[in-house]
Length: 339
Ligand code: KG4
Ligand code: ZN
Image (cartoon, rainbow, N blue to C red; front, side, top):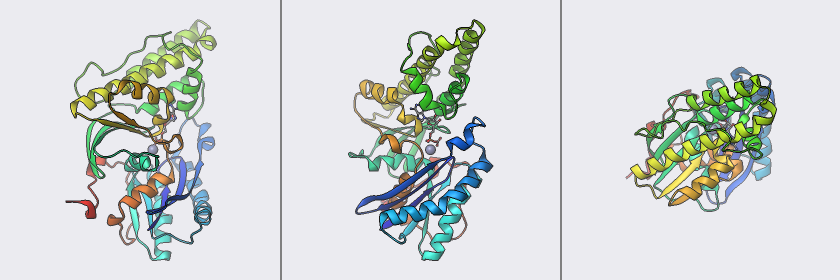
């Protein structure tokens, strides 16, 4: 069975064709980063318009690349995300499904991030503890099986990626700031400033990044006031990254102990962070899995894979599903897999 996957939940247009036997046949990704950079963040209306412009030509190109004329099912991201942007993907998916006479599969974006690892050379087995860290989400999830999720904790304020982005903006690094801040941190001293590691002394698995972000903001202001910002920027970036990564890892290790996890996987855009990848591998006494770099951030391949795993849930086109807020815990195992 071949599944076309369509991702349009935020500012990346992603399309891919996944074959349940042969694996990933083709994929394409278009980032809108340049369009939103001038505003310092994603503008929903601009995101929707650009998805509309890009999507159909990308679907055509990916089908041609895969050497197929159509697919047997169409998976699209149905949430969580920007509703207008989601409806672009859902709209085209539904229209194509009607034309091809095939079913659609509405996919949860975060389940897509989790199964991006199926495209790695050595995918993890279940169960595992997942650290989902993106621009919109930060959570620890006890994953018993595909579709069986228990959220152990989430962020009380900013997501980890958002904290990277906002701190990067203060440092004048543009948007999205995570990769730029990580790059600048390479030339800085991460012991130059001692920043807080929020929540590590508390029970539970929740995160909070607003205190760390404020502490970094005060450092930037101080450096600015004393005319030392240029020479301090790399040290602030390195100290911030070190504190954010220590917090993510500290919380993950606590949660792993609480559920006796022998495997940890990391998914979402912040999973591309090299320090997080290296230190978590060093500090966790068990197996650690990261998706390939290019599959950490949003893409169509992860939606196609999630759709392939949920073929049992495929449905005839009815309404277009687009849900801004949707908990992973609301998902269930696909019908065919349930005991
Ligand atoms: O998963 P994703 O592509 O989109 C969302 O669903 O949010 O994640 C994007 C986030 C952004 O906040 C970006 O700054 C962050 O991932 N990010 C990074 C790195 N690469 C991307 N953060 C830290 N270090 C990186 N290398
Ligand atoms: Zn994402």
